[in-house]
Image 1 (cartoon, rainbow, N blue to C red):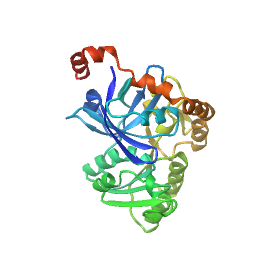
Image 2: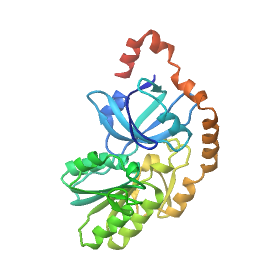
Image 3: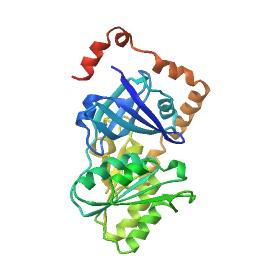
Image 4: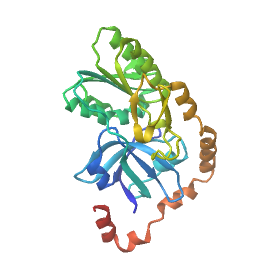
Length: 303
């Protein structure tokens, strides 16, 4: 049963927003949860955090950065195309309580993952400060959405092309140094950024959470690829997370594990770029059942 793309919007270079028809997932999704997506029957399974869901129209929103073979293939889809499988919602929802002042940090596409939790935290009565950033202005995403769900919004770019010049961690250091009372920090983005945030908040005893989506493989806990070392004990990002206490994460082990498949991923991308039409043909082929009996597929999707 395919999951159809109903909207596609380019947010930046190789960054695309998709709204996908998935009514059952849309009804159940909570902030912080993710889906496992497979584009076609012989494709790999990848985890993507749900940026937003709309139970009324039965859609979920996914924001994808085309980096590897599968994400670049996904970004090549158009409205009306469909992916083979979308499984979810998976993972533990974000812990949303009334903490007080909360700083939510989104680095690059991590902003898409941070956004729904920031919204939930504000709805719970917290004073939400968001810091979002990217290498350049073009890579800063969801600015208007972030502004709507925060009490204060700060934007940084590495090259100074937009907002304040510097890293998201520079702004966090400035806030903490100014005497701003912070009760919780949530950081989502590249592993080096999350590690830097953890080390910055540790001396101040500020509770800090990080989302470890980047190291997931199959999302079920069976492959063991997303093991996280927490105070010497193994956890799995997909079933025990994806959010963890940043001060307990062994970031040295995490960085090594995240690089495990780098060579294989590079080879797969190079092969795909040589003949992208092979995989695109598999996606564009419509299921005969959908062509001949669309009314049956509609009933199944809404059960």
